[in-house]
Amino acid sequence: MLNPTGAPAVAEIQTIEDARQSAQKETAPAWMDELRTLIASGQIHEDFDSRVTHSRDRLPFGRFRSRSEQLTGTLPSVVVEPKSIPEVQQVVRLAGRENISVIPYGSGSGVLGGTVPFAGEMILSCRHMNTIQVIDETNRIARADAGTNGLVLENTLREKGYTCGHYPQSLSMSTVGGWAACRGAGQASSRYGNIENLIVGMKVVLPDGELLEVRHAPRRSVGPSILEMFIGSEGVLGVIVEVTLRIWRLPEQEIDTVMAFPDLEHGLAAIRDIMQAELRPALARLYDEAESIKWGLEAPPGGVIPVITMLSFAGLYGVAEAEAEAAMKICEAHGGKISDREPMTQWQAKRFESHSDAFVDAGGYYETIEVAAPWSTVGAMYEQMKAAVNERHPVVQLSAHWSHAYSDGSCMYLTCKIPAMADDEALPIHADVWEIIMRICLDTGGTISHHHGIGCFRNRWIAEELNHGHRVLEGLKRALDPALLFNAGKLGLKAEN
Ligand SMILES: Cc1cc2nc3c(=O)[nH]c(=O)nc-3n(C[C@H](O)[C@H](O)[C@H](O)COP(=O)(O)OP(=O)(O)OC[C@H]3O[C@@H](n4cnc5c(N)ncnc54)[C@H](O)[C@@H]3O)c2cc1C
Image 1 (tube, rainbow, N blue to C red):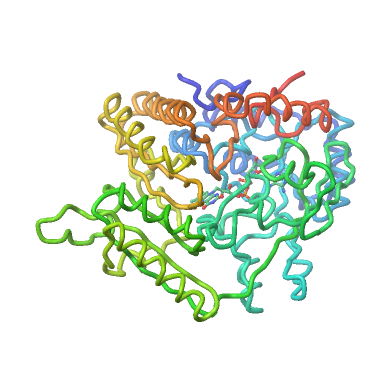
Image 2 (cartoon, rainbow, N blue to C red; image 1 turned 30 degrees about the vertical axis):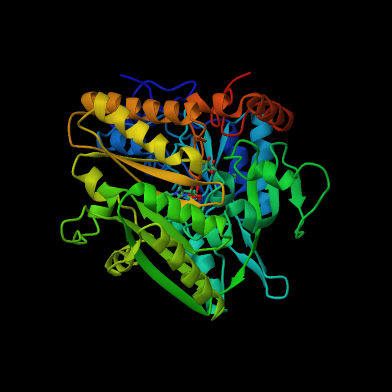
């Protein structure tokens, strides 16, 4: 069987039943006794079910395997859930002494296999570190433990009239530590920024057990940004234990509009001009024809099925209105027409739900791949990807929408659906679609990930994307974690010395 995980030491395919039988014959490692002296027994899970649950995240390939009762990699040896920073430090120091490999874990909502163990690693879950410590209204920041659930943070802020401004679709399934570790983006990124614009302080337990603190500052010019080194570190440089984020007043007014454009080119040009006019939409999403159809709008008489754009402006009364008005004019100049609001209502109702579950449960193969590219290439890049995928795999339905817009380019979010068929037939197609999309992206000046990160599934392409930057990352990894104990084999880094 093809190994598309890109992981360096992928275990043989193992069925969950085989893993159960092996687990029954295991003897606990010698360090387990010491672990029990550090952490209360209720925070240590050695049972088979906990280990299976933590053996995969939301990586689609892992979901396909799991549907066939197979593991993606291995079982973790144990799941440990410290409750405080000193407990994390003690566990990390034990790991260093005993040469135990560790995978930091938030909620397992990652979609690139970032928390998948490949060599029986210990899962260090931040689940019980979930206190919102400070909401500082004067400085408009909030400080929260890394394991704080995104929706809990947002709801707590809303009760006081604030918002965190970071709304990943996985808001209720993810943690603030996971947001930082994956360098995520929320649906309102064009207004509030991505996670790197929102995080202004952090505490990290380094692989040697020391606590690094990047104190909150509105900005600093003190050498390269240490904070940024950990944003996107995906668990390979230690455990993020606390995050400080900017927060925002809830908007006084929100204005939503749905616009229809004759084609993609006009829609993309409108979004580009909105961003280049320095407007800050809270939402700017453009769907290709295939994805526009699903909203169920009627085509105009004699016209083509329109391409749909959802726009939203938020902020002070007057300001939001003025921005919306200016955006409308730009849309109209590109042939845009105000359309029925229904798609926005439907989207809002399901904006924090997973859309793949029904398709996967029915036996299909559902994948999403997000990339980013400059405006000059992003439209042509999609046409090239679609043509190549259609030619090689006519059975695949490839569609896209554009979200997270900037003055210089946009994120392009591709959805790939393969109908129900046998794994042996579908998985090589799935792997080849990845190959086609990543290849065209790299060859046409795009970046291989906008916000999902690398995990293990993008291992094959990271060195080409970062060129000498990957050597810099490797150096940082070896300086902080010379024994390569932290999330080995992710971010394209070597798993063994
Ligand atoms: C339906 C769905 C929709 C999604 N939508 C979005 C979206 O809109 N925007 C977006 O950005 N992402 C999205 N994602 C991806 C995912 O939810 C994010 O990457 C999220 O930030 C992961 O958080 P988590 O707490 O679940 O992390 P996990 O999945 O537990 O971990 C992800 C990675 O981060 C590392 N990690 C986690 N916590 C820590 C920590 N405390 N210290 C060090 N390393 C850590 C792990 O080792 C792993 O490498 C979506 C996922 C799903 C399933």
